[in-house]
Amino acid sequence: MTLLSDLRAWVNEALMEFVRSENNYLAQIGSELEPVASAMERFLLESGKRLRPTFAYVGLLGTGAKPTPELLKACASLELVHVCALIHDDVMDASDTRRGAPSIHRAFETMHKDLKLKGSAEQFGISAAILLGDLALVWSAKMLHQSGLSSDVLVRALAMYDEMRVELMAGQYLDVYEQALGSESVERSLKVARYKSGKYTIERPLHFGAALGSINPNELYEVYSSYGLPLGEAFQLRDDVLGIFGDPSETGKPAGDDLREGKRTVLLAKTMELASSQEKTLISASLGVTTLSNEKVEEIRAIIKNSGALAEVENLITNLTNQSLNALKSAAIDSEAIEILQTLANLVTNRKI
Image (cartoon, rainbow, N blue to C red; front, side, top):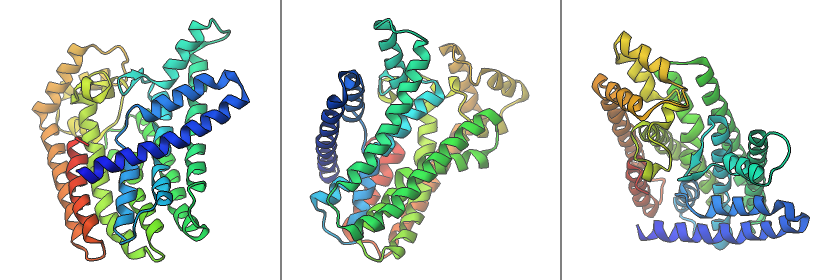
């Protein structure tokens, strides 16, 4: 755990140095960008588990390579891809909060009102959040390019970096489409879980780290996929459970927020398979209702538990985690990395990192 705690501190330091330098550049453009700089710095530095940089770093260790400041900066750049995803995700889900604070689009909507600006405050907030998310994605690439990596290492890493970003955007669209479709398919919901979260959280960062550390990472790619794909799905399934049953003081979002956002998760798809006709009707009428009461959330929680859907998803999380751990028996991974990956598998599925 000491290494993971130290790694998070190193990543935070690298991100702080980069973002504050970039914010100085924004200040030179104009004082109007001060709220942008402040929001980006606060959103990035005040919290976050740093999972993507962590898995990239461990993917690097698995090659037997020794970390350098340049490699660490490259790994840290992946956190900015995550920031882009979170800011845009909150816009698409119309989320009011993130990590216990107003989401970016709500914060800029409030700013518009406070300054008595012209036009729609809501549209101003949405527009600002889209641009801040885009800026985070640009910053991620800039931090990677300026990390100090040699050109050959950078070229190897870019292939995985680009793949990760494409898959993330595809997964985000699948998520939006499934909500519009009103899907009740476990298989389709698992596909969203894989592409929206699982691959870009674990598998691709591991591949990215392998590309940073080895001139021939292909064997490790296969092992890391066998570990990362099931674990990534388990990670998203845990997120789905927390989205309905999580403690707001820990998740930073109101209880049952996934219900109000109409999320078509595996947990809800499984519930619709097992619930009675009357219960299905109640759930269908409640999904996507932004004013859904806490009492109604509790009623749906009871249905999910009593139907057996929650137990089935918990079993699926356990099975996927075990499948992931079994993949670590490969001799291709450096022993130091194997031990850390075993720890991470348990941490991310219990969400205690």
